[in-house]
Length: 548
Image (spheres, rainbow, N blue to C red):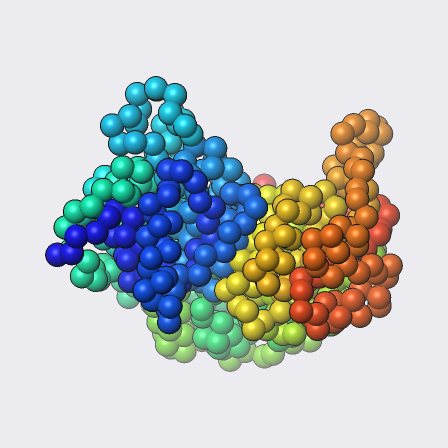
């Protein structure tokens, strides 16, 4: 037993559980937590907890998300209660939807005054209940002695079952008070459901006997690319990824497919294996019928109850299930000719159908040409981001960061900074629109201060372009609240101390990205553009084709 403050007990416990980076903004309720961080780092200069302080709380949370998404590790952030915590909720709901291991650390008001409505600084009603809605688990540390156990419980939830954010609150009186605390390490009690052998056998039999099987992969399969590819090759099954699964199987392998190509194959497939993927757009949008067998592998039992009921449900990790399927499928598998020619024909057809998406396709090619295979691309909610979901090649898991179904405009810049902090030796490029970039432009100052040398690209059309186009095409030119007055982004970058560049076409963009990679400061590239073709029109090739 050691006599320490609550702040010291929390910091010590975080370090024991491997936290070496914290994205954080200090404030009065959390002073004793930051004092403990300062003292810990002074005593542990060989293994300190790096503190990256952004210019806004939302930046801290998005950076933690980028850290987590790009590594599969825990990304942690700390903010003051009330408005500080609420400022992070856009990022926290995005992390929840993306199955990201994000640890939210937040202050509280004094323990004796919680819920009493005295009007304390940063007091909001039911803060704990609000935090519960965007986390898989949350708890409050009510004494220094409780800190090690509750921190360990937070990490147990982060690493067990479906990964999603967790939250920890701590009142300022708990951070400041000193008492005896048992600081010995607490082992994670990580819990995984076992693979049901009968279900795996039934799934292998369906796949082996199917004539046209398909495999869909999402973030739940991020670590299993090699064995999933082996299974796909044995079955001659296309392996389909959208944003969260991009790069699990290299895009240049003939079995690798994105959603437009998968749609072309969907009509004839007779067995679908979904590994750690919702595949809701395919199941609900393209339709199912009695001729299609569905097998789901997902750690979350609730996912098996959404949409069409699977013929076989395997509630387990992909790390445990895929090897079992690969081993069992050989007993049932038929002799299969290569589908390479069929897939290449589909790819050519899709390429022709989406060829109208210029200049997006040329800009995406320029980014991909400049970005190393192990580099990271963050797509903000913009025209380039939309198109990158369906056609940008990726070669390693976790190298494409996308906001998923939340569509969180403005998330890109800060998220890219978190990815770069987590991967300092890798290149990181983020593509933003001028609308989204200005949501977090202040974090360019953070990038310069902390030497986080990303390359940010702003495709600048002077509008919330996607909304403006909808106002034009769908609402009879009722233009309202979509035109933007922008600064000179090159001069703005230079004012922050970053490198500012301008590119007018794809070739210039490619050269500008390469120049940014060589710079010793963050880079912002302004790309003036006009209205771009509508990527949502790709949906016209994907109406419902099965069932009623």
